[in-house]
Image 1: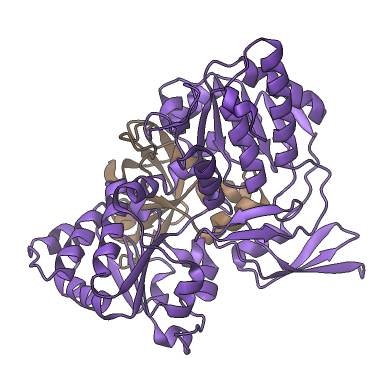
Image 2: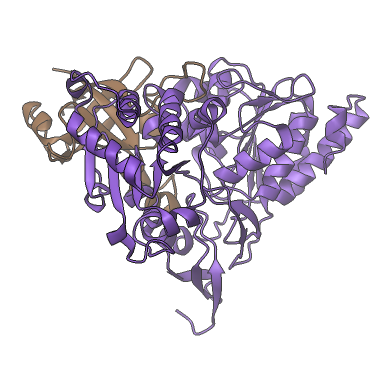
Length: 448
Length: 115
């Protein structure tokens, strides 16, 4: 470590949806590296201290080195000439970049989807059907005396959800921190989160809906069929105790993970949990929040919603946004072989998507913006190296509770931001559409 | 003999930290190609830590190395893997009209890899 250092106070970690904005980063200015991330969890420390400006070309076209400008021209040509272009990703970039991606997709009449569709997309569907009794993490920190974590493992996926927001911290009405709260964890396996909870309830895989529905019945004073124990692996006495605790707490919170959305039942599971939270408001104050994964996946939901009216799975093919999960969600339309070009931002679907979807992705021209090399950058027709949000790039992100937070970058990057690349692509696409007499979506022309 | 088990994929600390080192690096590859199994299931199948198994669904297959977990932590018949390209190989593209492929309740055929 050199003596030439600086400290960036109150920087924001964008590794996970906790978006902790109390990082004190020590930067070695000679090594151009973050050497210490005070207050960071194990994941945040890796996010900051493993960050290196990779020596990648600014752009690759068909695997050959190119300038950013050449990449922009190639990308704009692909998008302006595609019949069914798709835009996907967006959860690991700023709201400002997300806004540009929406504008491009609108202009070319494409399909717009974010990683939400393979994360809490089913919860997004459930919100529309059931509603959401919600709260900020600040309210939960200051008031919640009962917290139920369902289908998640925060100790490993969101470590500071426990220590900063929802379990350990002292709050306005929780003067003794953890001692003043009762915590329950519901999951199919005993994870490192289990020892933190006062009660661990282990459910058989695929039976979350049945357990949640039984809790709804118990909360309303109804009888539950004893056969439920064999079906779900959960003792009815445990559920009766939990139902009683839920009704008698002062402020309860259900924080749920993808253990509900990625298993059988999907949106029905999330809907059952949201309905349970609503039911409980007959007795006390109860809220429910999905625990979100990527640093700005909540921002993607917000930006896409305020610009189109829908959170994910949107198609502009008719000149106006239509929402239809299953039809306009990326896994589905790739698996059906429908898209003829893809704009992927800050995401790696070639690693994370099912095989049939990846096979189609490999067969179409793919444009990728990413800070690191990935399987998707390797299959791309045009791959841009971009700067990392939060570390190199300022802007806005949304914490998992829909609170907007500003980024305070610590290091400069040789690479442009996603917003800069997307803005340039948007401007070039607009020119190409005008020159070809295809004006694109007229309303989109007015988008900034 | 192959056995049928339920696979749950999810996040782990090591998956998260190795992700930051690089998804194309060895550490991430190792973390995402390790499958946790109930210790009694492993003993019955003649497997020990580090042995390889082939996981197969109707969509695809992958080979992963085993790591045993205590029966009280991971019930019999349940497997756990960190998210990554190997677990993605096993997912179907059918989302039942939701956009979400199942990755936490996947029926997989487990076969020890010998040799």
